[in-house]
Length: 219
Image: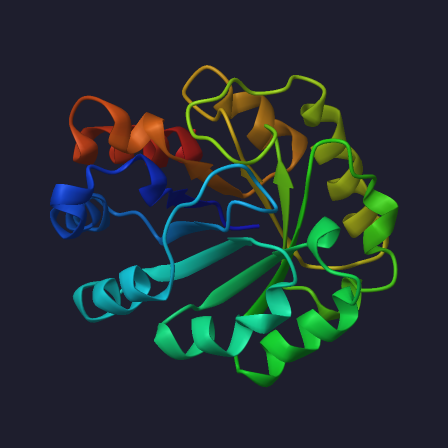
C-alpha cells in the first residue's frame, strides 16, 4: 500500500503554525495529523475546530483529525464541517463505536479507529467493513515526544497479517515515537501511514526532515 507521511502539528511552533505547515507541504508530505485532546480522555488539552477551520483555506493536505476525546459523537459533524478529511475516534472513548463510524461516513469523510497500546485488535472485528484506516498508538496518548513502545511492532505485524488474510485494503497508521531510528521496523511490520511530530517539527529544518522521511519510504 502507498506510504504516506502525516506530520503532527502538536509539535509545531504555534506562533508560526501556517508557515510551518506550508514548509512540510511544499517538501512533499501528503497528510497533516491534527491531535484534538479534551483533557478527559487524555490528560492534555490541545486545540479544536477554530485551528482546523483557519488552516483549511491555506493547505491542500489531507487533514487527518485524531479525536482523543470522550464521546466523540458529540463533535463529529462539527469537525467534518470545519475541514477534516479523515476523522479518527478511539475505540476506548465511545460506547457506540459502530454509530460513531456511521456518523463519520454520513458526513462524507473517511472513518478511522484508534487503539491505545494495551487495547487488543479484536475490538475491531465487527467494524472492519466501516474503516478506511486503523491508527495504532505506539505510545500512551496525551503527550508528544514520547519513546516508541517496542512491542507495538508485533501488534502492527499482527494487524497487517489479519487484514491481508481477510483481503481488506485498509491503511495502518502508527503514532508515537516515530523517527529515523524506529521508522524501518514500523514500515517492515506493515504500517503505511506514519505520524511524526517532533521528528518533523521539533528541531532542524522542517523541509529537510520531511524529505528524509519520504526518501526513507522509497528505500
